[in-house]
Amino acid sequence: MKATLLLCIAFFISTSAISQLSIDQTGANYTIDFDNSVSGINDGAFAGSGFTPTPSTGQLNSNGIIATGLSDGDINFGDSNETADFARGTSNGGIGTGGIYSFETTTNNFALGIQPIGSDFTPGSFIIKIFNNTGQEINAITLSYDILVYNDQNRANSFNLAYSTDNNSYTNISDLDYTSPEAANGSPSWIMTNKNTTISETISDGGLMYLKWNSDDVSGSGSRDEFALDNIIVNASLSNNIKNVEHPLKVYPTPFNNHLTIKGNNIESVTLIDLTGKTILQREKISATEMILPTSQLSNGIYLVRIAKYNGTIITKKVMKK
Image (cartoon, rainbow, N blue to C red):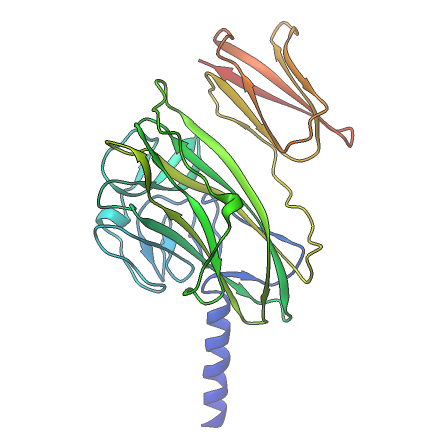
């Protein structure tokens, strides 16, 4: 009987450790990109097909991520909802029905999305649960994430981050507050804003942290823009001297129109070249992890982006304007 009880306890502890994003080492990046499976968060590329504690391909794991503020109700960690507001499927944007989507913001790049309406996500939130499985106390979390907005409507909405260790009392990080533009873009496309911070908070071994993105109407009237959350990177440290998050090199959107975004660490220069070898645009001595090239004046066609890093590496990517 005692052996059986010990086995049950061990099973429960093991199951708890993988029922959400489990951090089992410090100094490592844990990335949620909604394209690849992450234990406790999603199974395969997110397809907007609902939340369940036993997800199939394309679903989110409700043990580790939930949503609140929908007209179909809230779900708690471990609940299931695979219909209606919680499972609106995939879209490129420009839709009107409220609920949770998998937005394909660039080709084959999916993100956790929401179309807010009067009865959905105004207010509402996404919450991710993180489990400290390192075997020791964590003293800081470095966090990076991308907010994407399809600005096709004349209303501004917030998308702000707060954190908690008990999913009850939350601390807002005002430096990360974000509000979408009120005025609609005449030629809307997905526009990305990166946010990053270090959260100085003690998480005991076996303890939890909750990350909560809150949204609500701010100004304007009428319908609302689509929002998406992507590329969430979590890095735990034993002290506040935590290593910087390494942003993967990205060049997007493709095809592009009025702008081209380059994102990554340690970029020294970016050069845009046409197929004749002529330099069209160049930026040097870059200190930011993200830059946007204005490209509305360029003719449609194929271009090369040459990215030089401070370590001497040169990367060339082919892009297209149309």
